[in-house]
Image 1 (tube, helix red, strand yellow):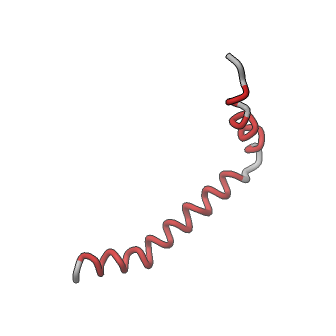
Image 2: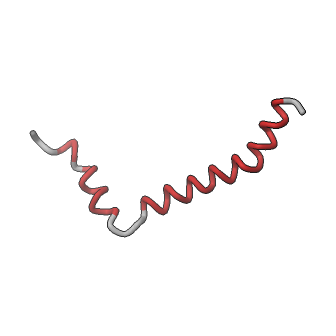
Length: 50
């Protein structure tokens, strides 16, 4: 089997699954309870004066 064909089959199956799981994890991490306070703190960093 050629390298390109093997990589193409991997990307079509397991690569897509890995990207979907990563996306779902990022979404769940973003919308978790308690995340709003941390997001607000991170958003106000540029406005804080030293």
